[in-house]
Image (cartoon, rainbow, N blue to C red; front, side, top):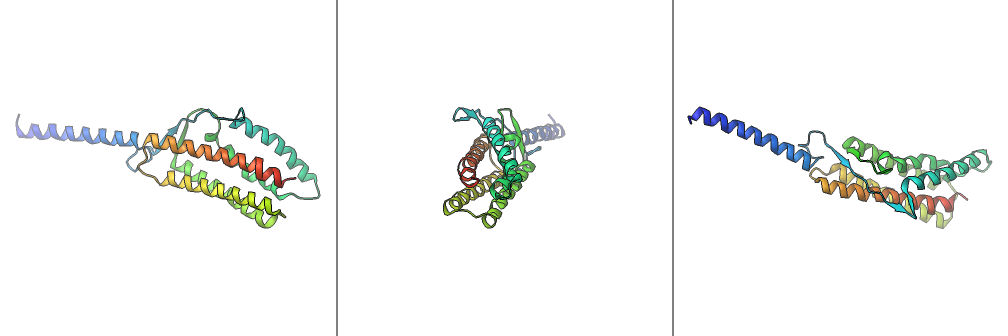
Length: 197
């Protein structure tokens, strides 16, 4: 084999190797800088709490909450917790949190998720000065605010990580989903229940 032909074969072989290496990196590290789409397909589990799915728990809470909100709007005594919950609730109703269908998560979705959680936290912070809360209610409010801060930290960690493998992302998003569910449970069954009376 002459030298020109060897160089050509070597060049083609190197090119194929580089393409395969980038394809592997893109697949194995879906949010890395080398990844073409920088997105990941998350496969949620089918968890239940007290025999209900997360979706059922949200539906039950919303049905009761809508009655509370209607009553509050008709009342002379404005309840800031009831009024502001309508702005907090959407972060717990994100599409990727509900159901068991696979969901595509990309950096834009993580950015939007982070922004929404920050807005919900700010809404809770506004309640600190707006409402006349007891000491116990304030403790629960601070716990809810801390839950939102932890969510923000977890989202940032996933968003800024460049070399998480597919299995890392599946595990971390599963943990994040669990944290959202726990945050919803705490907000609705502890803080909201006590402070909206």
